Image 1 (cartoon, rainbow, N blue to C red):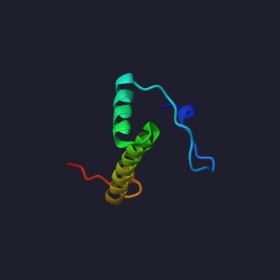
Image 2 (image 1 turned 135 degrees about the horizontal axis):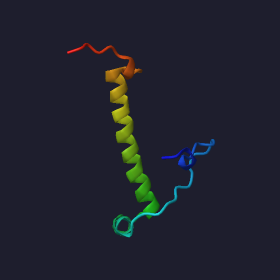
Image 3 (image 1 turned 90 degrees about the horizontal axis):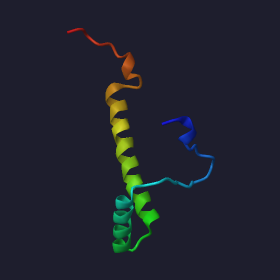
Length: 78
């Protein structure tokens, strides 16, 4: 991903997320959001929030187990 595609926080709590998505995915998102009585955007935010929680958890585990600088750890030759 190039840096021009990265959105940096500018002191606000929300920002717009836009982009093309395959039609079949949008169709399922729409059906699920209608069945749950929420907006498509609310569903996408829920899905992305769960993704972020999982990724942050993985990162936390890696940092705890490998240390702050895992590439500097001494490796014993086999």
